[in-house]
Image (tube, rainbow, N blue to C red):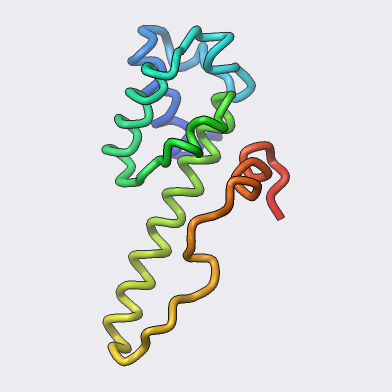
Length: 121
């Protein structure tokens, strides 16, 4: 069974490619299998950003090769976004606290590469 991010990414790709979502598999290469160029990937990223209320950085998008990697990236950014909302709510509850918790800073490119390739630490 697939989660909402998987379904949303596949539906967004299917709409853009004018194919059935069932034709999209996690191991499909976005560039070689579907023939997407960088402009098309940016359009798809913009659609996902708007719908998921996330921000996909250029350098993270450049590391994405497969549908599965795009799904993992969107899931991670969505989780991060939810974490930041909860953190802001917690900071509102404790207004004197100015400390920023570890892990909220942007991941380095190397950590992004490891995550996208399923080797997160």
